[in-house]
Length: 158
Ligand SMILES: [Zn+2]
Image 1 (cartoon, protein in one colour):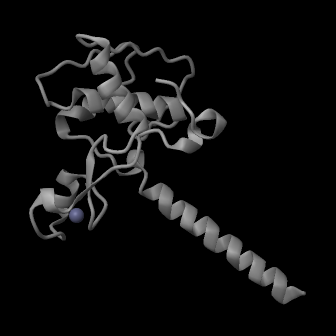
Image 2 (image 1 turned 90 degrees about the vertical axis):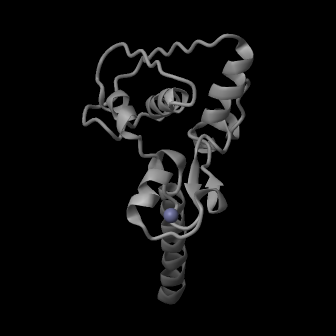
């Protein structure tokens, strides 16, 4: 009897350990902002306007901030999250919104991570443990908002 309970406890521990390891590889867990993006993540301002040049990281910056507020956890500030955030995203047309914002939040590939160490590029390169060109050793990060946070098993309407 005790052996069965011990075996069951062992399986439960293995499942819990695997779950924790998977969550360590989730996009928000591995995301590290570039230096110029940190101000957005550390800000407690009521209103933030993110603007910048093409490919400067403003969409990802805003999407990460949005995702963190949605799941109720902001890693870069010590204050508790207040509910009732309002986000306003604008673009030249709605296609940009669905192509950019939706995909960054709910589909893999908001950013790339190293297939070797699982880190974003600037962290991987600072660790100096992975060899080869960056483009040859990357995989898409999972969605910023994992399915487990979505109602009804992960359905979301665009
Ligand atoms: Zn690496």
